[in-house]
Amino acid sequence: MTIDHTHDPALRSWVTSAEADGTDFPIQNLPFGAFRRRGSGEALRIGVAIGDQVLDLRLALERGDWSPQVRAQLAPLAVGDLNAFMALGAAARISVRVALSAALSEGSAQEGVLRGCLVPQADAEMALPCRVGDYTDFYAGIHHATAVGKLFRPDQPLLPNYKWVPIGYHGRASSLVVSGTDLRRPLGQLPPGPDGVPGYGPSRRLDYELEVGALVGPGNALGEPIPMDRAEDHLFGLVLLNDWSARDVQAWEYQPLGPFLSKSFGSTLSPWVVTLEALAPFRVPFARPDGDPPPLPYLDSPLNRAQGGIDIRLQVLLQTAAMRAQGLAPVALSRSNFRDAYWTPAQLLAHHASNGCNLRPGDLLGSGTQSGPEAGQGGSLLELSQGGQQPLALPNGETRTFLEDGDRVLLRARCELDGARPIGFGECVGTVLAAPNP
Ligand code: MN
Image 1 (tube, rainbow, N blue to C red):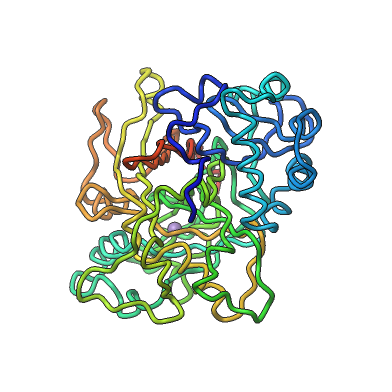
Image 2 (tube, rainbow, N blue to C red):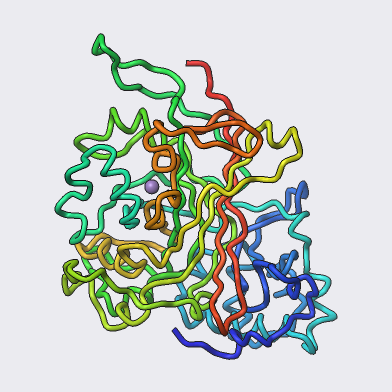
């Protein structure tokens, strides 16, 4: 991970909103997203978030002054095909980052032309950033795995495999939706009561999961594992992921093959993909607590030990329908940090491909719920309410054990370390609608 002039905290943009305190999208970030002008019906194109604006890369390619190499690299972005750009790998990503950074910097000769290529984010309709062919959800949050395990197995919260093998299951890509999409409460089979007969109806224990999603860049051929020391060459960037979960359905269906309909009714992605390059200043060593087993050699590398972790401050907020009606802002439910994950994105990717499974550009790897080590830092209501035993008190007097209809869940993430300009991920938002009739 090289730090270069595009990360210089003193670098400023002529887009004035990119200089506002607290913006997620200063010129040091430059995340990619798919959008069209709201209501225009125009073809999707890829844009780059800068302050409260989007730089339309279709217009920027038409009107801007770029080298032949950068023109070729921008071409798939102009037609909305982030997957094709993802397949090009780090060299193209860095080349485009350097060109956009220069073009958007104060004093750029391109300012006059590119001003006309900006769209306010408020006027942009976002779509999923890429085609996600496959979605795998891991379980790399050890504090979540421990807290949830304790609810079921107080004596042995973590199963014996946890510290050796990254646990995961195959998720459903077709029901991934972009932030802002409402989500219907799922119907499902509910655990049996005393009569031994399961019910069927709306989930009564609907939950969220605070996760980080890693999107794959260049893929690998079927049968060809990806070694750890090249794993990050196959990563494109990160998004926020809400892996909505129906806990009652999950508890009944998950044995012996794992989660199924309790997860596949919908998962929400944030629209902006923060690239590995933007995250370079926030890399941290990956280390295990004393006494924990070191990763097996195929999940270990000097680079991963030195800087496999990423310091990302994560937050979940909730706004109920009553809070919206009362004009109350969303309230923070918990905070955690992605650096506490038990496995790094590189390890998840190397493990995924270790059996020869082919990954493809745009594939999504979910991190698993990211909870902090302390009580009150749970990344799901299952943890925060102790399995529904301990209702959470909200500031307006409402309480929650699980989500109710009208609840809006917001995930946010920021990277803030000394010596770097802070960057953020934007929001990952979804509102729960009533279930269909059973
Ligand atoms: Mn999950």
